[in-house]
Image (tube, rainbow, N blue to C red):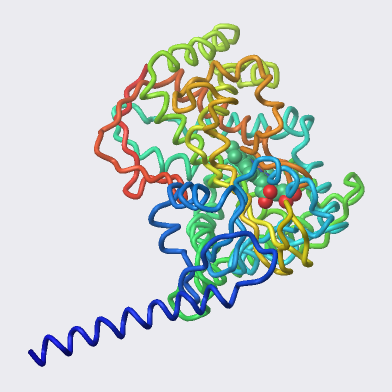
Length: 464
Ligand code: HEM
C-alpha cells in the first residue's frame, strides 16, 4: 500500500511539474498581438513534435490556429506562416526588416561574407557578383562545357553495377561545382576537399555546441581546412600569373570583373556556391531517378527527347546551349520532381524590429518560418496534386504563377536556378541515354525534415 501511495504521489508531482512548466512557457511568450499557438516545453519547445510528425504537425496546428501561428521550434520562438499571400509579402519585403533567419551554426560555418549573412547593400553586391558568375552567357560559354565534360566521365562504367544513386548524385553535385569553380575534379585537391565539405555540411545542420567531437566543432574545423585549401589555391594562381577560365579565375580578375571582392569574400562566395547547389541539386537528381523509375511512361517520353538530341549529333559531341534549351520535357520533369518531393520545405526569416503582419504584432528577433510546402499540393494550382505529372509544366505557364516557391521568391530568389537545371538536365541526358535501371527495393526514403534515403537508394544498372 505504501509503495502504491509513493508511486501515485510521484505521478501526481510529475503531472503537476509538467503542467507548471508548460504553463510557465506559455506565459513567458504571452504578449498582446502575437498569433495563437503553443510554445511547448522550456528550451525544447515543440521541436520533437515538429521533427516527429513533420508536415502533419504543421497541418494540425493550422487546423487549430489558422495559417499563421506561433511555436517554439529548433531553439527559437517562431512564427509559422502557411499563408501563401503573407509568404509572398515576407519574401518581397526584406528591406522592411525581414532578413534571413538561418541558424547560428550555419552562419558561423559558412562565413560572415556568406550571402545569407549579409543584408542591404552588402547583399546586393555579393548577389551581383554571384549573378555575374552564373549568368546565361556564362552558363552557355563557360559552365555548360565543364558540366558536360564532368557528367560524361562521372556516368561511365555504371553498367552491370549496383549503384547507390544518393551517393553518386551527392558526389556529382560537389565535384561538378568544383570543376566549374576551380577546374578541379579528380585531382588530389578534390579528394582532400570532399570529406571536409561533407563535415562542413553536417556542421551547418547541428546545434552550435562548441565541444570536441560535436558536429558543430567538426564543421568549424572543416571550414578552417577548406579556407586554407582555397587560400593556397588563390596564392598559387597569383604567383603563376596564369589566367584560368573558371569561376575562381573570373573572381580574381579584377580588370574584367566589375565586382571587386577581397580574398575573404571570394572564399565565402565559393563556399556559398558549393553549399547552396549541393543538397538541392543532388536530392532533386536522386528523386528524379526515383520518380522516373516509378513512372515508365514519363521515362519513355524523357528518353525520346534525349535520343532525339543524340540523333542530331555525332557520337561524343557535347551537350550545347541549344540542346539544353530544347529539353522542354526534361525541364518539366525537374519542376515536377521539385514540387512533389518538396526538396525545400520553406525558408527562414527573422524580424529586425517589432512589426505588424496580417494584423499580428511580431516582436523583434523572432524567427519566421515561411513554410511553403503545402502550396506544392494545392489542388487549385495542381489538379490531382499527388500525381507525378510533368506534362502540367510543359507549356511553362505554371512557372510564372505567383505562388511558386520552389526556388524561393523576392530579393533572395535562387540565383542558381538555371545553373541547377542545366546540371540536372545534363546528368539526366547521359543517365537515360546510356542506362536502364531497377531499384533493388527495400530502401527507406525519408521525406521530412529533409528528403533523404538514410541507408542509400540502390539501383541495379545495365546499359541501354
Ligand atoms: C534544384 C536546385 C535548387 C533549388 C531547389 C534551390 C532552391 C533555393 C531556394 C528555395 C532559395 C531561397 C532561400 C531563401 O530565400 O532564404 C535559394 C537561394 C539561393 N540559391 Fe538555390 N536552389 C537550387 C540550386 C542552386 C544552385 C545550383 C546554386 C549555385 C549557385 C544556388 C545558389 C543559391 C544562393 C546563393 C541562394 C541565396 C540567394 C540570396 O540570398 O540572395 N542554388 N535556392
